[in-house]
Length: 193
Image (tube, rainbow, N blue to C red):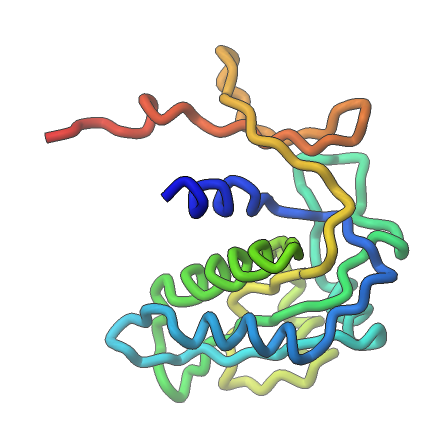
């Protein structure tokens, strides 16, 4: 359990990557393979995926994402720190009308898989969906659910306990370490029977 706990703790949202480290289609396909094995409501399996490791397609996807809302002065990674791979998670409305939490389960599984390989990623729901659908020629029967940015991390992130102020906003310190405040366990469990 400790190894898995360490993996979960290491799986922070990464927003700065080594853009010279190329991800390949095989690695991204392997992550989708992990998602294929996850639970699905009523076992409908309505999720579809677009994977991208080409600079041209990556640039299109990058232009549709909003990076780090709490870091007001930062508009996203510079070109040398942009992701080198993306997985777009789509819900196929010809299979199901409601995707419940399938896309969250799939995304977290892929991110844990990436972290286990020494990669890192960031899950996005702040997406210009109309623009993304146009740029990637995504059909009307497909709903954009999430985008996962992936690559080799150049960012250091750490988990801190939420302090007495209760502030949960992540921030970067003067050394550019990304701090992620988490509520204490005793504040989460209401009852134990």
